[in-house]
Length: 429
Image (cartoon, rainbow, N blue to C red; front, side, top):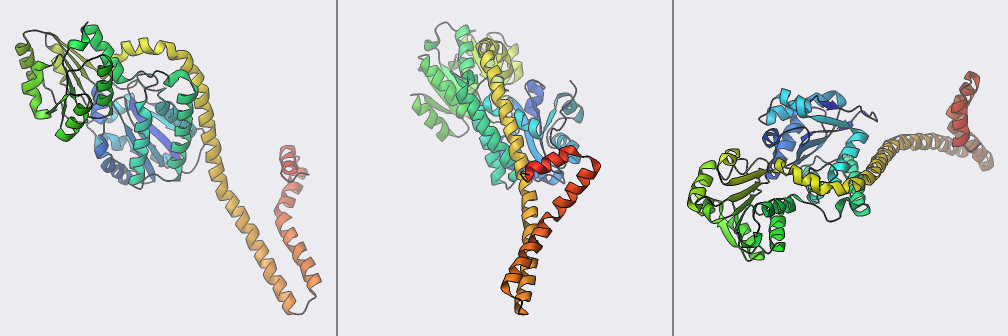
């Protein structure tokens, strides 16, 4: 796949670039190598800031489905962004060139609206992504890397994404990774309520999984986490058992279902541990779902008999079944996405216009100040105030209309009818 490079829709000296890879353009083996854990984002943000000379603002969104960078920079430095990624993560430039995409300005806003609203998610309409986008921008703000450009992008995009979720059926009865995992489990085990489940991790995704399990009357739940207190807190909500990660190898054989989602950079459950657990289970099947990127469960586990292992990309078939009914809603939502992108462009132009307005007003103030000073001097010499006021009014008027007068004369002489019509509209003539 060639690098997707979308032509910038609105050229500015400092532009907004959205650069990234997602589940459509990169397999999980590549996504897990470029994935950036939330706790490491401050370091990555400061690293790219020092790597790209013109970069003034940057936010990084890294989830199981995508890793994306939103940057305010000189367009001439765009290639430095993906060279930084190749430098910072175990990935080559060739791999990035085959899987990366770039969007500029208004197209970047349109893309971010789709991402934040769940329209670009592997599971259409999933709700967690909106919070993940907000977190990415808050981390950028805390690092001093969220300025006026990205602040405008995030505000307009998040507002549009919320409208998509509230004004269409895309967000109704949302399908999540958690619910999809439970649907898979029901296909493996007819009597899900009788099964024992191990949840690895204690974040939002695992919490949702636990809630779906409770809805299916699954009561035998254990939670394993690196921080035992977090495991105890989550397990307590579901009358479950808390474990440390180090307990997993010795306890794994007890569980029919294992669902994992942590931020660990390395696998937590290896092939050897699962192989030993299967022997102790005497060939009773074990259902495992790895919702993490990078993966928590070694991919080789799938080779073992009596183990049903699914990674997040394996959910695509069920996702397709669950999202067919949302196709029309997604089409309707696209109108809101386009409207949001247009709103971003209007706001962007308005922000740019403020600088021009300040220049225009400052120039008028300077001209007026010069004439007021001249009037004061005339009064000091004893010139009658009425005469001074008339001269002051005439001088300010002449200076303010000088440039428009020249423009009208030139436009008339050169037959520039569009400019003449514009000036008539501007001055209500």
